[in-house]
Picture 1 (cartoon, rainbow, N blue to C red):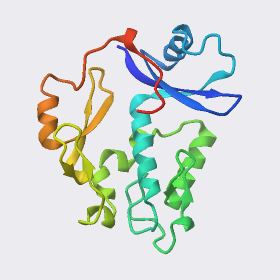
Picture 2: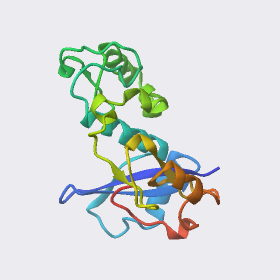
Picture 3: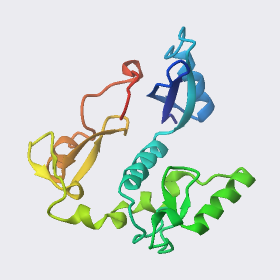
Length: 205
C-alpha cells in the first residue's frame, strides 16, 4: 500500500530548499521515485537532502511551532510528557537532537543512547504529537491571543477552535473552523480530487 512521503531537496549552489510529496510503499521506493519522476533530473545542483513519512513531517511542524513559544519551563517535556523540565530557565534543559526544541534531561540522555544504538524514536511517538492540547501556553488561551480567519466562512477564531482538513490523499490541506470542517469534508476530503500525475514541487505545506 502506497503512503505519502515528504522529500526535501537542497540546492548546493545557494542552500535553497524545496519539498515535494511522493507516494510509495517504502522509503527506498519513494527515493527512487523522486528521481524517476524527474523532479531534479537535469539540475545537478539539486540533491535529495531528506525523505521521511509525511506524518513525521507534520509532527516536525507541530514541534517547531511549539518551540517558537517555548520561553519558560512551566510545561511538560514535549517528548515524554512528564513534568520534568527545569522551570527556572528553558535553556537549562536538554536540546533535542531531533528538533530544535528543549526537552527534559532524561529524554536528552535517551536520544543520545538511541543514536549510539542506531534506533531513533520517531517524532510521531512524542507526547506532544499525540496530545498537543496539553501544551497550550497560557498566552495562547487568553482573549488577547491573535485570531485566525477561516478561509471558508471568513470569520475569526482562536487556533484551538480550528482544525486542519485533509485532501484526497490524507495530506493536510487548510485550517478551518469546526463548523466549516463538517461542510467541506463531507465528501471525505477537502479540495479537488487529484492523482499522482498532478504532483508538483511545493515550497511549503
